[in-house]
Image (cartoon, rainbow, N blue to C red; front, side, top):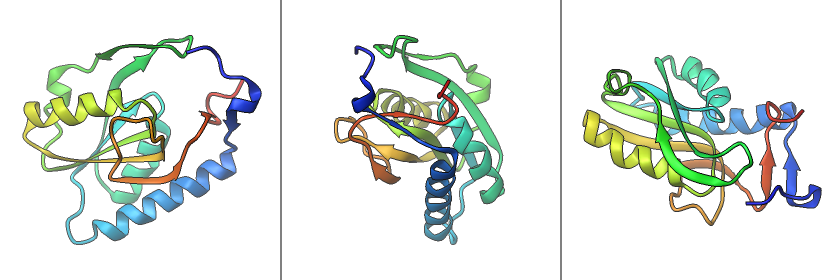
Length: 156
């Protein structure tokens, strides 16, 4: 994918990020009050800024998972998981996978396919944004994205 033009990008402010995060977290708390999550998995890198505060609000441990499908030039590559198997095996019970965006869906699809095979756990996916082009529709998302989202931690 070529670098999007300014018109094809949305720059997300820290304030807007905080609003989206609060909306997502509130939905998760409301929907899972009776059956809370046992663990949060944060997809590195974009999911970690959400996963840390969500794991605190849900009062459950966080497992960061280093997985990616985008290269530095924003083109798609192969899905790569760099997290050791013994770390992935901590994901037991009801597990919430958190990412910033379901864009192509490749990383989420990979985790939703591989983690249950490795751990036997039940997984739920939550993102701030979802694109219709994604192969995976998150169980929870706040808004639909129609352009490239530049998150506040990516903005130089």
